[in-house]
Length: 225
Ligand code: APR
Image 1 (cartoon, protein in one colour):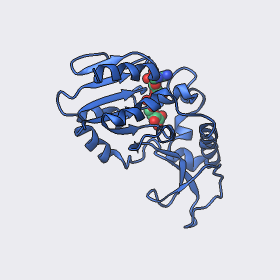
Image 2: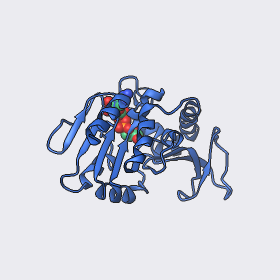
Image 3: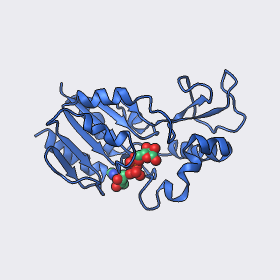
Image 4: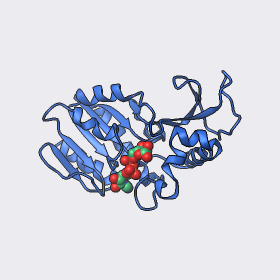
């Protein structure tokens, strides 16, 4: 089977009811990125940061995958599908996708501040004073701005070996994720689905300016004639 590599961003979860970051009314309108999504912010006010992610986690447990997540699962019948997601939700997994790489971490995991490698399942709130088994303060398993992206090399390798690329619901503002598509082999077709796309169709890039559910269906029509 040919390999389809899919890069997803917050937009794919919008129809499930999760806010994106940079759209109007998005998360970064009501919250200061430097306060809630950096190691410095966590050092300055851990309770504020933990609370921000506690709210995100509680909301995640109340929403469901949408049609776009499900269409990517169906594609596993025709392609070897690898999803590289910037999202920290588990909606791809809950929809049934088998191969998901989380570039920016996972809300439903925690880790001690002493060791980024060892994670623990986490469905409840994390509070200041909650400790890992090694006695370190727990924090969400989230890659904050300024932190290393541990899954990057694997993601690059997947993009390099892709036969087809799909990019769904991302403003492509945040690196290194935004630069991943540049690792594709020359001529690899790219389908970019976003109602407010930050790129235009050109050469091997086809832009589908639609929301994820209808846009992914359209992309599938083009990929599987
Ligand atoms: N379907 C598809 N795309 C949508 C939809 C929808 N229903 N609604 C909005 N979008 C698009 C927007 O047009 C925008 O291009 O989703 C994109 C969301 O962009 P961002 O909010 O910047 O989210 P993302 O690109 O995933 O952000 C990357 O930034 O703050 C960090 O770590 C955070 O992983 C995140 C990273």
